[in-house]
Length: 166
Image (cartoon, rainbow, N blue to C red; front, side, top):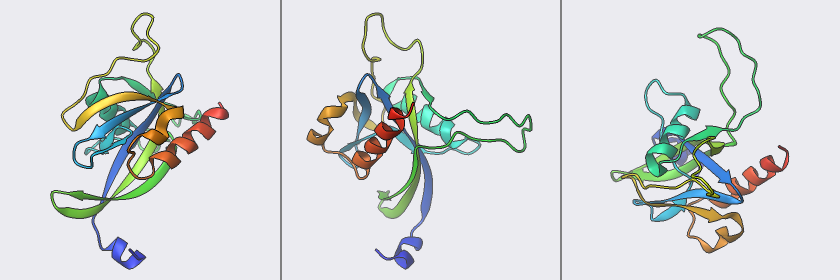
């Protein structure tokens, strides 16, 4: 689709979380698109994008996470402040209720919050929310075997590069 056609479609802002722990990534099998992708969804009114990513992970998988971001200066001003930088900002064509649109997605690099691991567990336990068919931890080395949604491979490659610098 050319730029003119792309801009004629509605655009919704979304946020997602690329949660990586112990060489695994947290993925959900989305009911509507029938593919695996990082948890995420629409940004709600009065919600910051990184807060939406954290909320969506919890709603879809039951896992509390924290956003990984470079330290930012504290302004002390509630009217002018800094937000955590996303891992990337992507546009993905979607269909909702029969209407074509673009999700403008801010994807955040995250890790499970401290204290969410069960005693002796390598990864936090999961539950599936109503929007997902299933949630699971996937070994990064086995991602090519999974039916992934668009851009997931590229986002994971970007996340791995970012993690190598930490």
